[in-house]
Amino acid sequence: MSDNTANTVALNTTGGIPTIDSNHAYFLHSSDAPGMSLVNTTFDGKGFQGWRRSVLIALSAKNKIGFINGACPAPTLTSRDYQPWSRCNDMVTSWLLNSLSKDIGDNVIYSKSAKDLWTSLEHRFGQSNGAKLYHLRKELSSCLCVCEGKQKLEKSLDDERLIQFLMGLNDSYGQARGTILMMNPLPSINHAYSLVLQDESQKEVFSNPLISPDSSSFMATNQNDFAQRSARQMQRNQMQHQKFGNNIQK
Image (cartoon, rainbow, N blue to C red; front, side, top):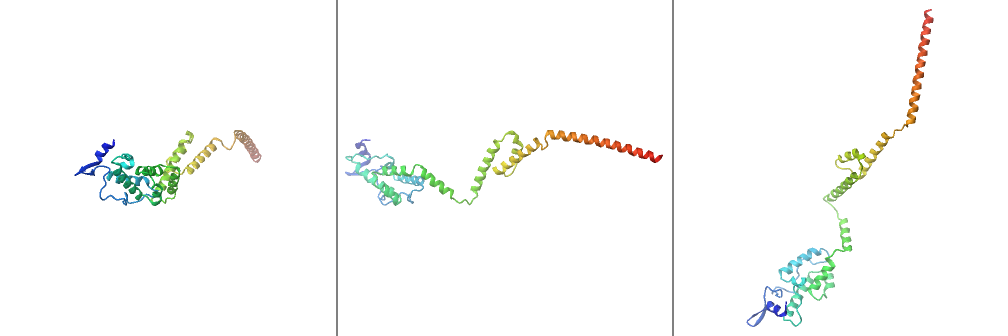
């Protein structure tokens, strides 16, 4: 947009006195003052996204958001619009500084324009970085849970690990897997692992008896020999008993 077009939009002439259209971005209301703050809570380095949203809403309501997003660039120094633009730019810059804590404000106070100040804040606090993630994780790890939500989450994660463990077992552990899945509540993965080991030990007992085949054959042979000797001994006893009876009858 050329300077002449900008002048036509920004300035109206009433009785020979140039005035700014109230709908134009260069217009400042009588209540606008450099000491104003755009938000109730100053930004101290935490919660940038929420603070940023509040600032954008406030600037949009004042029709000044173009001074931070580039929609209202600086006119040339020779333009008639440069003076009203500079006034509005300084006003927006003051509002932004008043909405920052002193430490952060001191770091950006020498920005050339409101847009440069806003861009600096975006680059510093609007992007995630390793240090910020570390501090967030550290704060979350020290939070005290009073609603048992942590226990429920840990139980859900443990159940998920248990299911993954059972899915990795082959079909020979199907009975143990079914027994574990029928338990309510589901056991811990350590308990489930112990049950699987017990099932495996029982299978080894039944599939590998303590008595070897050779020992079984030896015992069977001895049992047969013992039975045969017992039978012969019984026959001899009967024969002696009959002979003794015959002698008595004589």
